[in-house]
Length: 118
Image 1 (cartoon, one colour):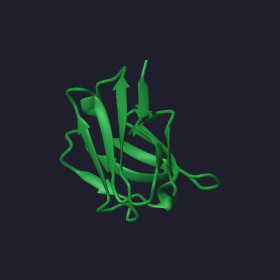
Image 2 (tube, one colour):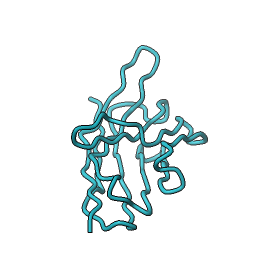
Image 3 (tube, one colour):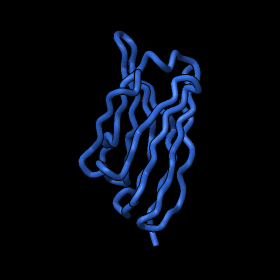
Image 4 (cartoon, rainbow, N blue to C red):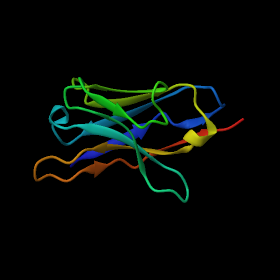
């Protein structure tokens, strides 16, 4: 079955860095665009960054541009998010998502908590 398992979250001070990973299994990773989303308490889930199946195209929310970098390794079926210059407003649960395909729904990981606080 499809599995998306995030890791790498934690508590970090403002200005610090974290690297999130999403290890996938149960589907052909290289055939799907992938994304990172986040959700804070009381807020809707929002797109943070997306990457095409080949990795040659990426997109970012304005709030994280120039601070976050999404990447993927199709050989190891892993999605990553490097987060630098973290701010308190980046605090959220971060989820990786297999984006929908033709006739195939999207799929979510369970999420990893990122807390930015001094």
